[in-house]
Amino acid sequence: MHVLITGMNGFAGTALCELLTAETPWSLIGVSRSAPEGASHERVAWAKLDLGDAEGVTRLMQREKPDAIVHLAGQAHVPTSWADPWGTFEINVRSQLHLFQGVLAAKLSPRILVITSNEIYGAPRDAQELPFRETRLPCPNNPYAVSKVAADAMALQYYCSHKLDVLVARPFNHTGPKQNGRFVVPDFARQVAEIEAGKREPVMRVGNMSAQRDYTDVRDIARAYLALLRHGKSGETYNVCSGTPRSIQSILDHMLQLSSAQIRVETDPSKFRVVDTPISYGDNSKIRQATGWQPQIPFEQTIADILNEWRGEF
Image (cartoon, rainbow, N blue to C red):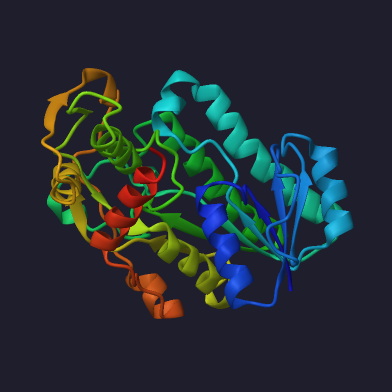
């Protein structure tokens, strides 16, 4: 099987590439505007391409003829979407449109796994709406979420109108080694590691600590994507989540327990979102029933792995 992965050099893409090279005989072609020069594995190749180039995407499809596509590329940072809402929408929607149109132009019929986001659900109106299930209507409350609602709907449209073999994963929050320091958990780890190394004063600056999120290790998220490629049903959407809400405060508390440094915590208003969701967690029964997937890595291990990775930077 030949699998094309957009954004394979990103956070989840890297984890998925490592999983597929380790556990399958498949060949992989990664697509990115900043594709690395060399391949990390003999079954991995790269195509340097801006997915905004419709003709380039069609040529890529005609050349590679993938058996499966995992669409991960996009702008995934919610605060950035507030600063550049149109850029976020354009990147996240146009790239997917060009992939679908390129598949049709090349007369291919690959399995296509589209990755959207739990952000499409927005905030619950009452406790009865939790945990979020796939049947819950979208209620986006930030520009990134709006772009993912469009991507989600587009996937269903191309399944209905063109009979493409498309399915959708809606991952909830995920973290782990190699995540960009802009995100909250690696941001905590970076600050702790800097303090331990004497690179900054023993003060951590944090945002909204009361928010509760459903976190899964990115390595388990990659396993979910593989399970969906193998066993997911066309035209369906699947939550990918642990089903357990965790407060941001509890994550920080655990990380501080792993450090011997004496650290003071201060609130930084610049780290608060324009609009925040107080609590979000999902029901993962649909993906469990369809594929047998469930998270395997304890969250405590995830936190320790992230902190140790950042300690190695200083």
